[in-house]
Structure formats: structure tokens, C-alpha cells
Length: 92
Image (cartoon, rainbow, N blue to C red; front, side, top):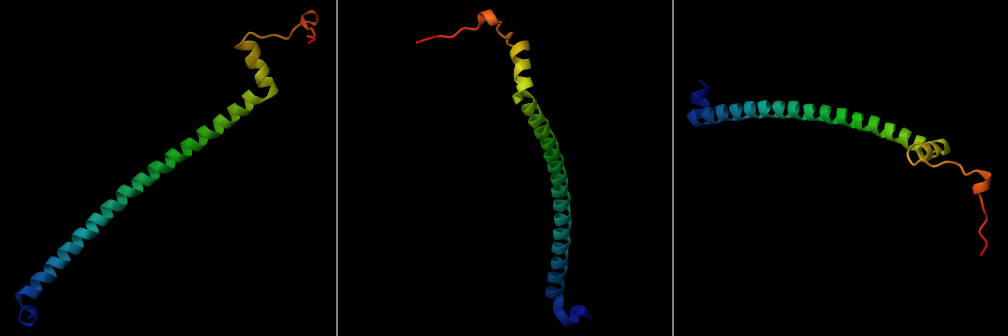
């Protein structure tokens, strides 16, 4: 009955349109899944970077404090406080 009303070409075009629409839905669904996976991966990486940034900020604060500078000077550089006899004044 539909063939009599619309003709063979119209029915064929309708079938092609339905198939193209179905393929578009499959492609869009797959693309959404892939992008969702990428988004989750990027969010996890962003969280890891935030944690690393926080740790670096703590380390920076520890190293730039007076106690941190003194510890690096004595431990790594072998510096020490001068004794009273080692302190002098240079005059021009």
C-alpha cells in the first residue's frame, strides 16, 4: 500500500534516510564514549597535578624559611657561624 502511494523511489529514499540516521546515532554514541573517557583521564591528570603543585608549594615554603635556609647552608654547603675572633670590620 505504501509503495502504491509513495512509489518505489520514495520508499527507497526513506530506507536510506533511516539507515543513515541509525549510523549517525551509532557514531555519535561511540564518539561520546571516547570523549567521556578522555575527559575522565584529563580530570585525573589535573588532580594529580594539583597534588604535585601543593607538595611543591610546601617544599618551597620549607626551603625559603629561615630554618630551611640555615639547614641547607650547614648540611649541603658546609657553612658555619663565625666565632667572635673571626668577625672583623673593614674600613675604607
